[in-house]
Amino acid sequence: MRFFPDTSICIDVLRTAGPDSSVELFKTLEDSNIGHISSIPVAELFAGVHLSNKRNAAEKTEYLLSFLEIIDLTSEIAREGGRIYAQLSRLGQKIEFNDCLIAATALHAGYQSIVTKNSNHVARIDGLTAIIPEDIIN
Image (cartoon, rainbow, N blue to C red; front, side):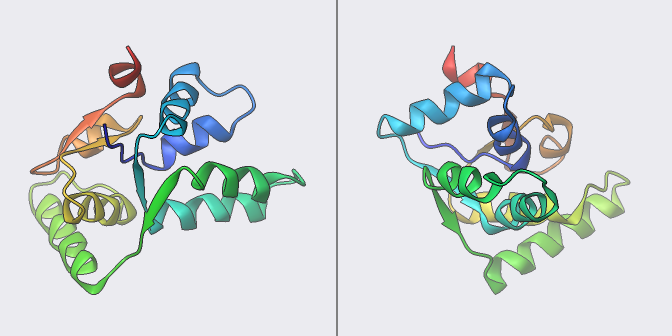
């Protein structure tokens, strides 16, 4: 099964005492499953690396990302992210612009779901569903 985690799941794994379900999800990626991630969460994670006082923050983040294929932001994805943001804004259901770019990346890559702890955000986007790690590993 292919997985497309967002930033919230990666942060769970990077925390020393992160939820077991998120950690288990990444363990399944070790066993030959393919995971993808947008370059947007990569930027968000590295903002955290540079704000962290932990010496090994960059190494832990790079190791985590080694299980995922990073999908770079293209002009096509950027346009779709803008469309999603505008649509949700018009409906009074606006979410963070970065989340719209992540969603656009997932859709562009052929995903129909994003693994996230922010289910209420993803649920607003046409063509995507939110799943939590517990739904995958159980």
